[in-house]
Structures are given as structure tokens and as C-alpha cells.
Image 1 (tube, rainbow, N blue to C red):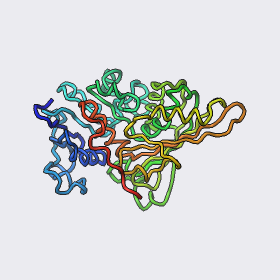
Image 2: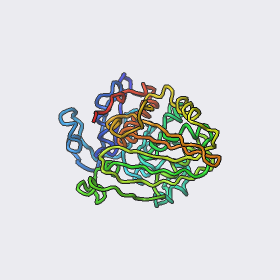
Image 3: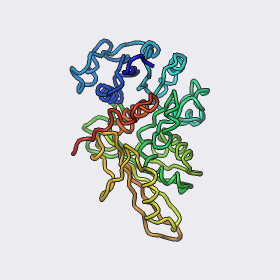
Image 4: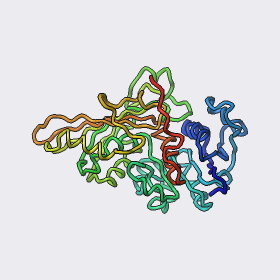
Length: 353
């Protein structure tokens, strides 16, 4: 820890959208300051060369330095590197002794075989998968995160779907197949332009991609199982939507006909009572515009009529993929592992519309 009241953070992988959100919020953080921003892009340039909204607000520049160099003297390293790259950099940070919050998918899974199946490569450090990192969903693992030194922050789709289903998982009501469709904005694909995120096309179409094969699938199954679900088989179809920010997920779950709307309401109320960033909006279903630009997530549900001994519960959830689905949740985790106010620099609402 630092000897002053201000703690120091290093951002490693600083030019992407997630890192931009980290910078934006850490520049107004009451207890943490950014010491260095490491990047192989924009080297020597001010951070606002990649993040124009930060123009003139900081003297930080992008530095082409190793993770160890970036994090030396810091209390926490915030990793915004791509999947597969992060896994090769983490050991030197563990050796340094700095606390770590990682936004990539490299340390979310405990099963190396699942990592290879969904990420396409062998994990370079499988010995770190089981026990080194705590999965950073505060609504499930808050106390474990507080005691952790390394946190794997969840993926954007994963956060959305998990929070939509968490009350049912905790109650033991998730069994067998769960069908999910989730629509996401183009910023989830990163700052580098790609055919699928090219705005003239993206803004006028909706299309599926990676059906039943998205890399967040095993992460979601693992987390719901940790919460109390049994034998969950996730049938997940992601949808590319004409949005810049935001994810909207719809999940369909069959429960026994004895589980009525009052029971479901009680489960959601109990699960999220006192949660600072989860809300169930009264009088409407969740929607992206109400949470875009913020660290809040909205959840809701609709309970169907009984039919042949079963009824369908349709669960809805919405969040900003770059904030609660990314950098905001990483800062929430950072606050927890540093013993700070969990909500520091995160309580602002988004804009409307």
C-alpha cells in the first residue's frame, strides 16, 4: 500500500474503450490516482489521443513499458489487455505482489479444457486457474472479492445474463436447459474497426453471431452453478444490434407451476435488497437507454400461466457493456479489494435519452 491516503493504479492496455472508461472514472476517484498507462499504441502521446473525451484533463501519456514496470510502486494493476495476451503477462504481476483486476476472459474459468474449447488455445498457465483468481461478480462473491488479491472481472454478456438469472439460481430453480438471446452494441467488439462493427452496416441491421458457441457460455454456466443451479445447459444466441453501447438479454426458464409470480417477486427482492447497482424498475421492463453510460443494471421478469404442470419465467436484464459489463465493474472490484467504498466514482446515473 502507498504511504499516503491516495492509492496508485496502473492501467495496462490503455488505448481501448474499456481502458478509456477506467481512465474517465479514475480521474474523478476520491481515493485512487492513475500512476501509469501502458500501451503499445499511441506511445508517447497523451491519453486523449485515443480518448478524446479526456482532452486536457490529465498529463498522463501512453508508455510502451512492461506490466512489471507499469505496476511497480502501485497498489493495483488494472488489466485491459486482449484475451490470450493477458495470460502471458499475469505471472510477472503476481511475482511483483501487486493486486490485480483483470477484464479479459483469461482467468474467469477454472477448467483449462473449457478455456481451450472456447478460446481456441491452450492456457499458458493452467496452474493459476483454480484458486488464484476470484470471479468478480460482487452480487455473488462480494466477501471473497474483499479478501482477494487477484480478481477476474466478468464478461459483458456474462454479467447481464448472470444477474438476470441469479435469484432463480440461488433458489435452486435453474435446472436443465436455459434459453437466452442477448443483443449487444458495437463497442463490445473493441476500438479496432471490423466489418461487423462498421457503422453504415451495423446501424441498419440485426444479426446473430457465434450461436451456441460464444466464449462467455462456460463462464455463465460455472457462475450459475456456483450460485446454486444444477445441470444447467445454456442455449445462448448473441445478437449484433444497431447500438454503440448496451446489452439487453432475454432468458426463458421453465419452473414448476407451484412457483407463482409472488414467489418470483420475493426471490428478486431478497436477492438484490441493498445492492447498490442492481435495480428492478417499477412499472416497466429493463431497457438499455435507462442504464447506458452508468454502472447500473436493470433486471425484471414476466411469469407465464401454468401449462401442463410448468410455467415459463421470462427474465430480462440490461446494462452498459463498457461500464457494469466492463470497466465500471472492474473499478467496483478494485474498490472492494482495496477496502474502499464500493461505489466510489460509480454512482452517477447515465443520460436520458
